[in-house]
Length: 251
Image (cartoon, rainbow, N blue to C red; front, side, top):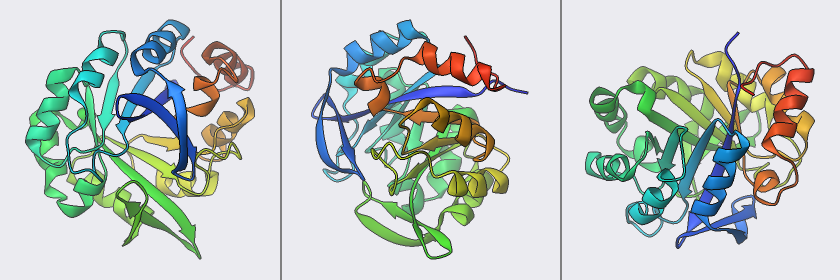
C-alpha cells in the first residue's frame, strides 16, 4: 500500500498566513516562509499555498511569497489562487511551484486543465473542489466559497480526472476550521469515483480525525492548517499515531 501523505496548507492574504472558520473570520497565523521552514524540518510530506483573495481581487498569486516559501522546502509545493490562464500557471512554476491548483478557473474553462496537463504533466495539475452538503448531493462553490455553482462534487471530480487532473483537493466548507473532523462521507464518495489521488481538507482537529479520513474516507492524503500553525500537534506525533493504527506514512 502506498504511503498516505500529510500536507500542510498556508492560506495567504497580503503575504501573511491566515485561518478562519467556514472560509470566514480570518485571523493571523504567521509568516509563510517561517512556517514553511518549520514544516520542512518537522517532516511534512507536501505544502500547499492558497492565495485566498487572488481570485476575488482578479490577480495572480503572489510570486514573492511563492519564492520565499520555495527556498525553505525540499518537498513538493503546490500553489493555488488566481491561476486563470496558462501564463498564470507558468508564473507560479517559475517562482518555485511544483504543482498548480485550479478551482474557479477550472470550472469556467475546463480546457485549461488539459492545457496544463499537456504542458507540465498531470502530476503537476491539482483541481481544487470546495463543496457543501446540500440534501443528498455535495454542491460545488467557487470564488473562495462565495458563489454556488450547479455542479455536484462527485460528477465534477470525474470530469476533472478525464480532462487530465492528477489530483483532487477536496475541501468541505462545512468543516473548514471547525476542528470537528473531516467530512468522510463526501471524501469517500469522491475517492471511490476517481482513480487519481484525493486530498481531504477541512475539519482536522485531533489525531484520530486523520485515521478516520484515511480509512472511512478512503483519502490518499490529508491536509490541515490550524492544528499545525498553532502547534496543537506536531507532524511527528501525527505520523506516529497513524503508524500505530496501521496506516502507512513516511517517517
